[in-house]
Image (tube, rainbow, N blue to C red; front, side):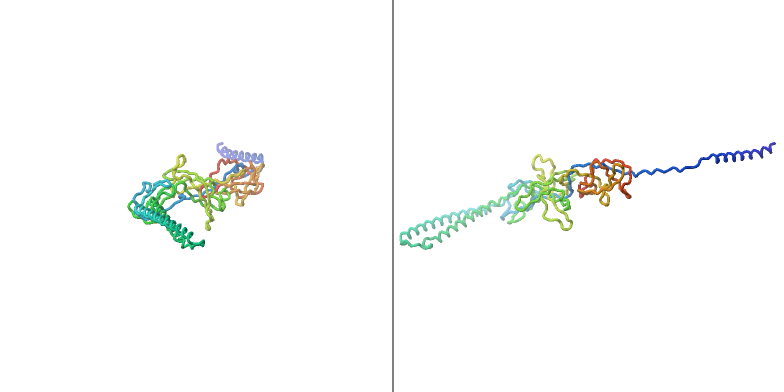
Length: 402
């Protein structure tokens, strides 16, 4: 009995398994293919919003004085005294006495010239009297004929008059030389370098100091010549006075651990375009750069300081400022229409910078502009969009434009 169970039990298990497999095969359902769903490409877009935009041009330059001269005497002599303002970095006002030169020789020259004038005046008076006597004598003895000039002492009278004029000129020259012994400031300024001191003998034209004016400072700002189209640069016509106003300039520099800012104005352009770089050079003027007047509101500026400049240009309306990524290599942009399909669009650019573009025609308010850098694009391609709000586009770094 046990042997029979050992044989029948495996057979029953195999038979049950075969019956189960047969039932599963007979009752199975057929496989049906499931269609795959392809989603449109996702792109970033921004809505075009018109705005009034003021163009800005960036440059950089070095602060220089409006006027810098070498102060020199117009006479020779020994320096008797030097003003306390005649020191490196010292300030002075117009007509301030900066130095005095020994004046004794020039005072004596004035006395001699005064004596010569007195002598010439006496000589002229004597000749006038003798000429009057000669005229009366001729009138009494000349029988009505015309006397020769020599008889009436006319040449002697002319000579005496000339001697008096020469003496007066000598006196005026001596007085001017005496006045030149007091060296005065030609303008309000500052001493860059003192070159002489008291007790030193100076000749006419000897450099006494290098000074510069402090009423204005100037900065040369080179820009690409094409950028002049975005600026209202003052133009001086022949015979006209230099313009007094121009585009505003914001200047910035870091000095002594702090960042300082100043405001200037473009007053003129240099007379030529650089033939190598094709750059035009604007001259910016900073009023009262050393803060000598009260209430200027800005810190003093130093000569030789290297500054970054932002020139405020023309303002135009109904412009669209977009990120640079909106512009494709072929100069077109992609617009997503109301059916979420891509459309190529030709646009007119008012300006193209490193980070931004300014569109003046070709798009309208509220249109969705594609910002994603797509490589394979077809007209009418369907897309999904995610709106990206461009609240503020960064200003270009120095050397760029906006």
